[in-house]
Image (cartoon, rainbow, N blue to C red):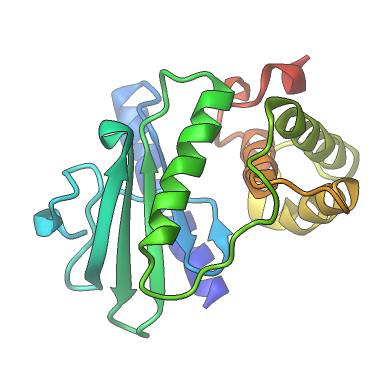
Length: 207
C-alpha cells in the first residue's frame, strides 16, 4: 500500500508541477497522505460534487468520496477517499500557503492534519508530543539538510533520502519528540531535490 501511495504522490506531484510552471508562479501545495503514514506529494485531479471546492478534486471513477472538510476559512482542505481498485483508504490535504511565512505554513498544515485525523473513517497514526515550536522545527530542518548535504548529491529524490533523514531526526529528538518532525524532514527533502524553493524552509535553516 505504501509503495502504491508514493507512486500516486509522485505522479500527482509531476502533474501539479506542470500546472504551476504554466502559471509561472507558486500557488499552493497539495499533500497526499495515507491514513497511517504521511507522504509528500501533489495532485491535479476528485469529487467535484463533494462540496470541498474546485482545487481539491479526485477522479470519481478511481476514488469513492468518504467525507472531508476545511479549516481557516478554506486555507486548509482535506478529503477522505477509498481507492476503488484496492479498497485502501487515503486522506488528501491541500494547503493554500504561498503567502504565509514558513512557520505559519507549518501551523496551517498541523491544523489541517488534526482536523483530517479527527474525522478519519479509519484509525490514524499521530506523531507524539506537542506541536513543534519554531525553534524545534528549525533544528529538525537543519539536521535534515546536514544529512542531505553530507550523504546525497543535490537534486536527489525525496523518496531516496527519506530513510536517512527520518532516522537522523528521530535520533536527535529521542526522548523529546514533537508533532511536526515528519513535516520538517519532508520540507528539507523537497527543497534539496529542487521541487520546492528554499524560501519554504525556516529562516534559521537557510542561514
